Image (cartoon, rainbow, N blue to C red; front, side):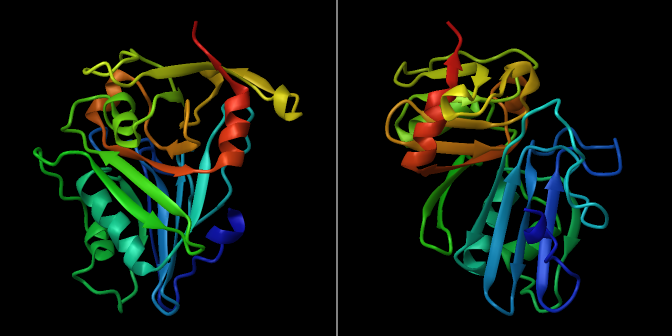
Length: 268
């Protein structure tokens, strides 16, 4: 991750947009903006791009230390994808403008970037409409792996995980997120999909001697009970998050799904 971010230099045709609901170097944040954290970067010269979605507050400070400060207090998640091309980065940026509502804190936009592109427009702010429903953007990595980016804005008012992700993927979910408030129901309105909240993580089944309670975990991820779906997100499953934009990257990966399924322990 550090080697990837270290390539972001203010030269040539490289650009990036960094966002976090808790910005580095300040405690002044806009609580109405999305509960979103990440870096979307691109290189016009090579038609390449990458997207880092993560859960760490105040990271990264691109004008200072790239690595997050060492901490053993909370677990975190990171997912970095080399995108197929800049067109893909633009499709993600377009969804961000209308759904995730990221709080931008560091942007570098090369002069050659099309001022009508979604990447440029995102760098200038978001454009959210109260009537915009949640959306699902399909995209591919450079290697051809398929992903679904599911997201919603602050006006939707429902639980992201049980009312959007589960029905979109047509699966029941086991969700590990930050739980510091009232948690929504475990069943959606039409009683077709269910969500279980993970309360404890134990890695012994994977040969790793680590375990922790959910109060020590700031990670945001989910697995399907069937179908090999894995989702990595920046939004939690608690009622207060219905008033924030955010999203999740979902994909099928049997090896990762099997590993995560082995460590899941649920509320009785």
